[in-house]
Length: 437
Image (cartoon, rainbow, N blue to C red; front, side, top):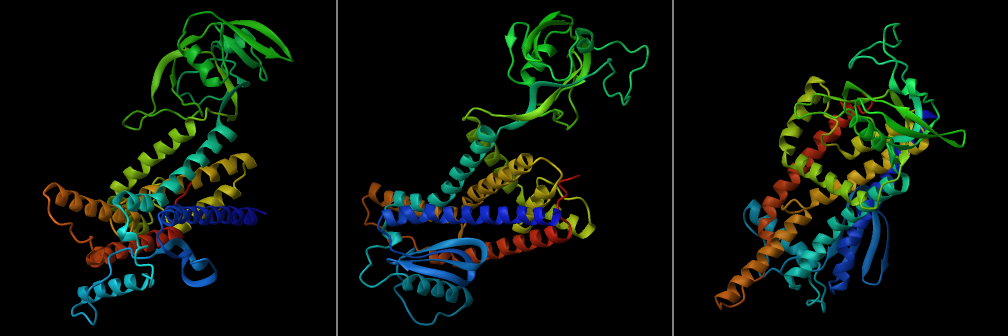
């Protein structure tokens, strides 16, 4: 059974990745067709063709390796003016790129090429793919936090501490001289549902905790629902040093990574954990926070890849927040699916993982280097800048930017991307991230 669940997690992530890639390419395809560009192919995957079907002028299909996708637009760059063999490696590469580009320009459709579009249209076409991933991430996170909810303390009491123990104590039983906890003294029982504290209604345990922590030494009216009836109790929080926690019960850390301990009001009761639905505005905020984290990861990517290489050689522990390959993501998905936890908990983690994957696709594709979408956007903007400069100084319109001249740099970037993928793949196979540590 555990093996089947593990496999189900991998399949879930593969399907999610395929949909994410497919929608990314749709984000390019729709505006390209809207602006009249001839699109020859829409393909998911690379390598040998598995299946395809031509609808109109576009061939739609799947290829063997589901590691990406592409659409083939007519005339990504201006048609070449020279032909014949080129001398030198770089010149040969440039000529090959120009020849391949020329082949996409169909006879009779010379005016339906990408490079002839206005700059703003070219930017929209190339930005459409990453934006589709961002929209998908926002939708996923909104479903996650507003549809399913965020797991945090509810207003139902799960436990009542019988005595007050010092912060950091490892004792599991109360001693005879330990003072009774305020919650026990007030008569609170497991199963009670908090309704209000100090006249203020509470809908989460975090709200109740905030009121209690702000009132050490003050007697508060506490309304609980017990066996269907409301009862009013009195509780007096004591001043105690406690580790501050977030809504999910995780300790808050300071800039040095140490747990934050503060003198606050304390009563000694714990909440049942449950999924609490959040406002619709939280999903986009979660996506925005993920964008910031992924952008930070990419800025420090060389250092993080070095750390991955060192951990692979030495067998050291991998950074759980570091980069992963598709294999690593699938492996984590399988482990999550096979854990001993409620189904909704596991599904929530998988959904969050898929949302984070789409954020990564959004940010990564905006890196301003060819062959990534961000590189094409930079080329379009440079072309627009040259044309604007010519208009300002009343010069003849310049020739369209020929990005095939950047083919050598593009190949270097592609080789680096392949090397990065290879390193992460080997690391994820032989020294995977341990998410259960």
